[in-house]
Length: 280
Image (cartoon, rainbow, N blue to C red; front, side, top):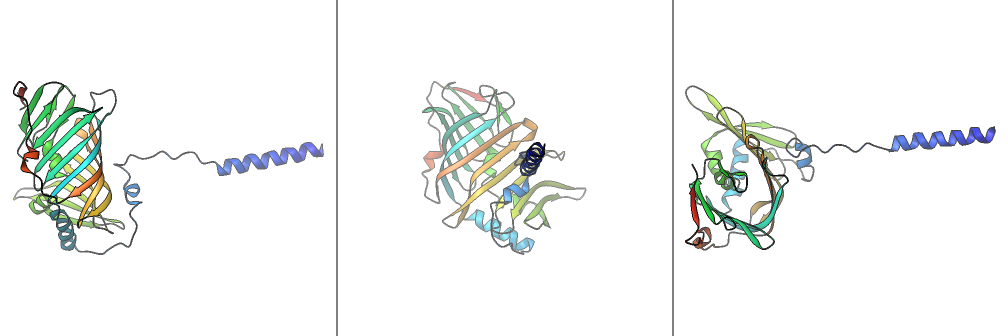
């Protein structure tokens, strides 16, 4: 009887100890909703800066980036696909608005995109077509089941134009600054976007842009910054367009900045027999 009682007591202690030790796995919040997770890897002493000093630092960091070339890994998620589309490629950028992105899979080019900030051309070799249109309009490419937005992609590398064109209002939080970018006219004050900037390195780690009706048009998160030739460069960018249920993640590697790029690299070489499709 005593042995049974002792064994029962020992088993109970073990069970209670196990339950106390066990923790149900915490559900990981989406990166879009968890600011603390984004900032958790940024270590250092927070700074106290005025709005003018913050803007000067952000614009200065951004203005020092003239060109960028990088290998990339991309994951694209769209409502029309059964699963994410993954590919590798390269990206070329020249300030302020020249962009070229080439995506490949299994040594086959899936697409070749070139933009000058006003117009773009998207070449799809497997389809033998080139799509053309205005950068600042959403376009759907049926063969991929995706929406393309070259103007938004270029703007990920250029804060100066956005900040200088709007009236900024500052909120200060313990670990970051929140800048509301406002458009003010005689009849209304409209919020055009937000920038979230960490208070340690003064890096933009999140950016939101809004439609005229106040809905979210674009959200972008920038992480894993490195310094190259006095330029602060994120090694990962996550972008989503909620209204189109489309998301894009880009990981950069073998990054080079501020090397002279031949202007020809932004011009597509398209065979004559390719069909041209003009997107409205």
